[in-house]
Image (tube, rainbow, N blue to C red):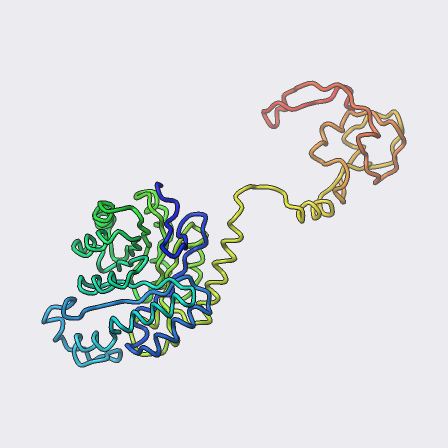
Length: 373
């Protein structure tokens, strides 16, 4: 992997060895209401996420005339036609700029996904430090090229996509640069747990040599936490103030309390994953003294005896000679009388010569002592 991390203009790092970049995907869950959008940004900052993401659409550039005029009268509709519905959920460019100022004043990264070329141009004029390309546009070559040419980091979701389609998208973007994060994603809303397929993150990482994260649409939070344990450097989840609000995304979104719990659990997993070295920590060493065992006399023993297997046993605590040295203790000569249950320490015995023999039951070489009884 060429890039182990990406540095944004604000100085925030995304990548391996850095804290997971947690995105609250507000999308259109503000219902087209700037007051709700402001509240969502402020709440996201309180929760402790790193970024808020919105969606921007220029309806006439996004939809054909047929799409604009298509009837849309279901329970989640905000207009009689799909075009009217989409327009009702849009924030203006000026409102988006206001939200960017608010988010950055609260220490958040602000960015958005553009669903058409006009919207992408509007977002680029806002001097964003990162762009998002949604799963729907992974196959949209003009958008990929327009975004790549902007020469800023790109987060690309891979829902609904075959590996061959991802191949093409990555190739288009890499023509310009490789500051790319690929988000493993299933675009079902909500996504069934058995269709999440978290190990695909490893396949994507190996195939493209790029940073990899996870965009989740599950109802719970466990898969998102698991993704971090598997190396996701970005987690994106939809965010809502209330799952019962009208709209299709709310059901797959997290409310503030759930999102706060997710952030907390991600940080716990990061702390638990920080050390890759297998070692015995001080607390464990203290436990070992109490719970492990030492070699002790199995009965009263006389000075001058050569110890045999029946003369010794193992009992707690583990502050004496370890049972790992059992074979070395067998055949040793006692230098003093030892009462039953008393630990046998090395200064109480005189070691005898050793030779290498084969133990048939193990089929391996071990050390055996001369004179063992």
